[in-house]
Image (cartoon, rainbow, N blue to C red; front, side, top):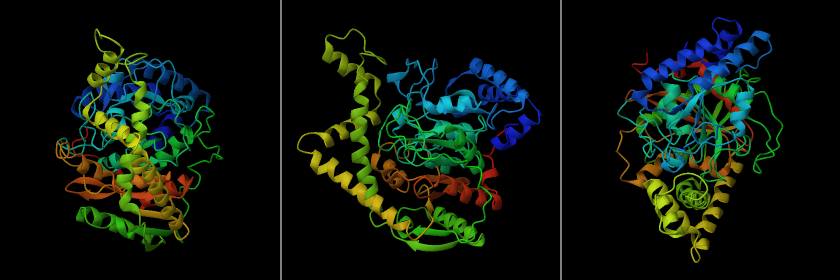
Length: 484
């Protein structure tokens, strides 16, 4: 059963080929038996999952259950879950059990999805390799000695190892799309504001967006149907009409205009990765699309702008973790200042500390205009590049990540090299656009991803474009070697 897509499992549940309890038990057994290899889960919610599965079976028996009813999924461990530890991959929140659930958790629960547990992640979503987690690194099912990408590496590894049918994830600068590329999955980051951020522990509030990691575009559409909603609890959530994201998956692509940024095929791109992406774009030409070269002239400024804006917002958001109200508290503090200093220094990892320091510096008196204000102006130029491009084309395509998965430790001592892993994904977050990564080939026997960037609230069109590619190719059906 674990080798089926969410859509196939939903059909099997409706036909009563198996029950949700049987399916859930099957996944829980796989997690218990196999996840010691991958370290993709932080918390496993076995008892709660079986209770939810029993309820799903009751709904299924009535004959009017939603499509996702009874499907076992996992949640990235930065989405608050009522009564279940939500650690954000950090020692700081190792003991945090929220009294409420994030909106998307509630939405998926209302749709009948079964929560298997909470997945590992880079600490506070800061990382591109899932090596900064307090709970240890996550292993890539395609190559155990390589990273799965970050920060949603646990969600990606769980789905790639077939320990969950799908998983929630978050994307601040590529943290859904890059793990999707490195683990051979479909990863969707919706338009900023399409999916509620309420109950998602914040890293950089103007960039964070919840999304999905699944095996296919059809599965992403099913999850987005359940997750997307207007939420009055989130002031950045946009009151945009909802749509059925599965409705137009089979729409032909004749007449589609694809833009390929010349800046995305330059120095730094692994040549075989570039070749796989170019071959994938040719598949689209065979499906009736036209391709033209475009320019995103400010794309080279995306990484420096991001690494001013994101740390600045992180330094503000993480100031709440002070050892006073919740989370980690140092032992026997001498006074209030000692409590603050030791609680934060003992509970935050090196990468989180680095970004807090960079952000605090960029926001400090005398440097705000030189760094943060200037980065925001650059952000506006990057957004305008996309606005101009979408007057000429329907979708922008290019590589998701510069290279396939790299070995553990290869970039941990060089933060800049690690940051450049997100060079093709960051601009999408700065502009607030939807982005999608789909598998398009293998390089060194490891997956590489094709990135699709759409116009605002064009998730349905992106999923249609991805689905048509997956109807023509088999990259999304390939399993990591050794998967039982």
